[in-house]
Length: 262
Image (cartoon, rainbow, N blue to C red; front, side):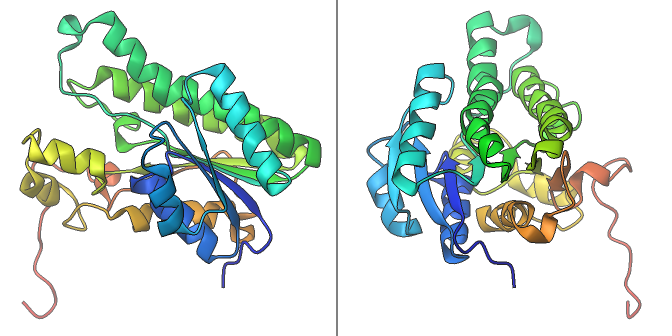
């Protein structure tokens, strides 16, 4: 079985969604976990649900906050071996020509700058120890073009490139860096979009070879694998956790061909 016994993990975006699911799984696999999130009100309850040892609050897009959160996590656990960069925000569909610059910049700041800052803050400690593993949360929106989502797509494509670069740069120093690229996942953020009828869940299911959206726990399992020694020879990889979305190339909905008994 995969074990993370004795590892010290910092999880950003840990108060909900993929971050919370990953923190709960890491703790269940034996890791000591610190949750980081800008939503201070939700962190205590999330710590209780996940079994986290401590929490820290801040904005990943702020250099000062990123450095402080990494320092507080390292002080609470006696170091950082693992980092899960799950903090992020979505965006609404909007044509590029109509998008305000400050809206574009905010999406990039949280999703890309925040990932960079947390990698740097936690990574320095891993590099000093010559050991560590980082998993960044990308998206299928960073793997292909999604009209109306130019800010989010650019941010997640940047996360992919950052992951690949750090995987090559830090690999010789004992630190592995990978990413997961989920498709539509039933997080609170996506559920809020569903409540606003921003997209049709049935259409998403028809477009996905596995026929449904992901659960946060399914993304968490992929992240835990990449952080574990089972992935000891994997770095710089961007792993789609998307039910086959990114490889399906035919027109229209997924072709449901008859099975052998049909």
